[in-house]
View 1 (cartoon, rainbow, N blue to C red):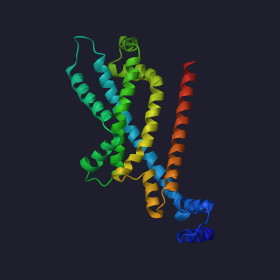
View 2 (tube, rainbow, N blue to C red):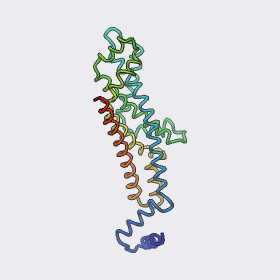
View 3 (tube, rainbow, N blue to C red):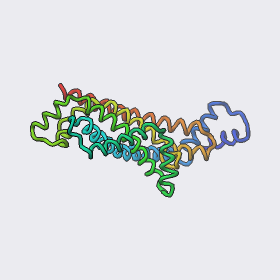
View 4 (tube, helix red, strand yellow):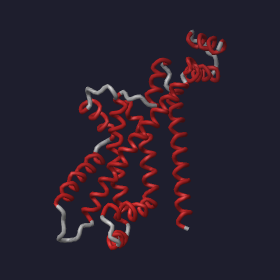
Length: 253
C-alpha cells in the first residue's frame, strides 16, 4: 500500500517511474484500491441474473411462436384454421421486426421511450433481451421441428395423442438434440449482449467497469477486467453445453 501510494504520487507529479511500476499502479487502483474487485463480482452476478431472466423469457416466447408457426405450416390443404392464421401473422411480424432491427436500437426504444418512466432499467434491459432472443430462438426451434419427418407427429396422433402432447412428448425431444448447438450459440450471444443494458443505465458488469474508470480516469484495466470476466463466463457456459451434447450423444447409443 505504501509503495502504491508513493509511486502514484510520483506519477501524478509527472515523474517517470517505468512501465512496470506504472502498470502496477493502474492495476492496483482498478482492482484492489477500496476493494473495487467486489464491484466486478457484483456486476458479474447481475449479468448472470439478467441472462437467466432473459433466457426464461426468450425460451418461453420462442417455444410458443415456433409451435404456432409450425402448426400453421403443417396444416393440411383445405383444413386451414383462421385462428392459427391470425396468430401466425402476428408472430411473423414479430420475428421480422426483431430480427430486422439492431439490438441497440431496440434497447434504446424500450428504455427511453416505452419504459421511460421506469426506474428499474436493469429489468427493462432483461425484458428487451428476452424479447429479442425469443425471435431467434423461435426460428431455431421452428427449423428443428420442420426438419423432422412428419411421420413422427402422425404416429403420435395415431396413438390418440392431441397436438400439444404429441409435440411435447415426441417431436420436441427429438428436435432438441439437433437444435442444441444453435441454441447454445444463441445463449452465449445473449450473455454477451447484456453489456448493451449499459446504454440505458442498467447495472451489470460493464456498468461496474465504467463506474470504476470514471473514478480513476484510466480505462484500460477496468475494461480488460470486464472482458476477461465475460470470457470466463462464456468458456464455462460453452463447457457445460459441450458436456450436455456429449451426454445426449451417449444416450443415443
